[in-house]
Each structure stands twice: as structure tokens, then as C-alpha cells.
Image 1 (cartoon, rainbow, N blue to C red):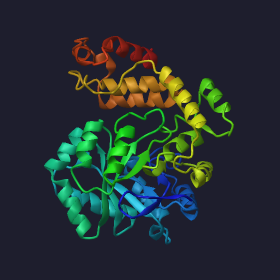
Image 2: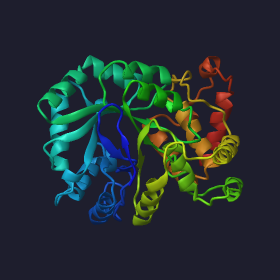
Image 3: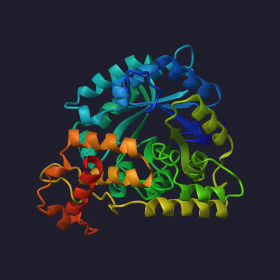
Length: 378
């Protein structure tokens, strides 16, 4: 296993981290983790050098931490850095911090957490965390030995990212990054900024939730077929992230032994700056093909929201684009149904066109919403 320095912390973490958001499940669905199989693959990864395990309060309908706790029994807890995350969106008072942390440690069957992250920060959640003085409580928990290091995971613009990085003495940040989304949210610019400030950079979604590895379009596969060294789509995606020396660890949401074995093999020799100019050119070709398959050129700047009728416009467009760009038909339909449930049906659009007045891309948003509805409900 390849190990990398975690920013200025002095810690060495495995280049491959085990992301526990997509553990194998039993027949009863997402909330029912197959704990025996989850333990088997997590322990195999640890036995083969993985020392960074990442979970969160809400994973697998709040049962993910229990599964991780069971996997780390029998001496495995002492072999890893264990990360979980504070569900800021659920907090209503400062006292909630200790309540959730205590619950999480009970589920994980541990008396300390190596890394505790503010989860999924955007501007609103960051403002909420500041209002509730969550950082004071994190620092207090650290002084009591319940938390050893503090960080945050992130989903918003680069400007918000820089503000958060500069606001505290963080150990690490967890960001979304892959060769298609190189300038999405924090992106490469955020990666470089965090590293320049001494933070360890951990990457999530290196394969865009598996979309860069599954149902690969024929024209993208034709690009990979041109390479002198043959690699799977997964290897191309992971190697692109590991090619950046600023990246400390890459999380993979592995849910089968085959995935664990493949990713361990890739992690062994995917060194920083190891991709050739020809490799990077091919990756650029694949990226361009994926980008060209996008139907609605929404940049998810969020200028169009909040919608007066609660339509989650950027999210709806993202689901629609995933359907065409990545062949993610089943997951796109599921995500569309979820958006309808938690927000408003795109049919709730009254064509007030306030969103179109605000859109920097001058998109015909109301027309596109009808296209989305026609695809998923026509």
C-alpha cells in the first residue's frame, strides 16, 4: 500500500481510504447493511494496508456507523484512523453536539474518533455552525480526548470553501473531485488552496458514484482502447486523482470484494505525477465526451434558487444530465423521485421566469423543466 502525508499533521494515511456510504446491503434494502459481508471486505482492506475508514451519522439510514463499529471489533479499531461526521443540519441547539457525538461513539463502539468532520458544509450550514458555536464544542471535545483531529466535508462554491479553510485550524478537508468535475465545487482550485494552507486533502466521488466506471459509453471506451497501457475505466479515474501530489487519500465506496481487490492493486503504484502526457491527453478526451453528452449546460451556480415554488432546479437538471451523460437511467429515476418527494414536482413551475432573469447562462429554464418531466414521467 502507498501511504501519503496528511497535510502538516505529520500523519501518514493510506492512499486508498474505505468510504462506508455504499456498503453491501441485505435483501431488506439500503438501511439493512449486510454486516457480515461489510466486515469481511473492510477487514480485508485493512489487512492489505488501508488505514483510513470514513463513515457518517446518516449513512445507510443511520445504521452505517453500527456496521463500521462491528467491522472494527476484534482489534481492527486500533489499526485505523476512524472518521465520522457531525450532522450539522440536525442540530437545533449547542447541546446537540455532545448528544450526537455520544450516540455516534456508542454506535462505533469506540471511546474516541480520530477525525470528526462538519458534514456537507455549504454556506447555510456553515452559517448555522457558526451561530451554534459548533467549533467551540469540537475544540472542547478534542481537549477531552474524544476527538483527535477536526475537519470538514464540503459542497458549495470555491469562495465559500476558501472562507471555511481560513476560519479555523483544520487538519483536513473532504472534497468532491474527479476528472469530469475538476472545476466543480471546491475542485482543483480548492484542492490546491487547502494544501497550501497545510490541510490534508481527502477526495470523495473519484468515480462520480461509479458513473465513470459503469455503463461506460462506447465512445469513451474507444478512448481507453487507444492507450498503450490497458486500464479499466476505474483505474483511469482513480489514477487521475492520485496523480495530484496535494491529495492525501482517495475514498472509494466499495461494496464487493472484487472492488476492494481491484482498488488495492491500483493504489499500490498510482504515484503522484506518474501519468504521462499521453495519459492526460486521453483523460481529457474522455472528459470532453462526457461533457458533450450533457443536455442542459447548467453550471449549478444556484442563482436560480430558491424557486418561489420550491423546485430544486439545479438538482433536477443534474439528474437529467446524469441520465444521458453516464447512462445512469435507474439511479436518475430514483433521484428524480426523491427530489419530487423532498422538494416540489417540476410541474409546480408557474413559468414566472424569475429564475431565467437570474441565470448567468441565460438558459430557458422553464422549457428545460418540461423536458425533464417528459423524460421521467412521459
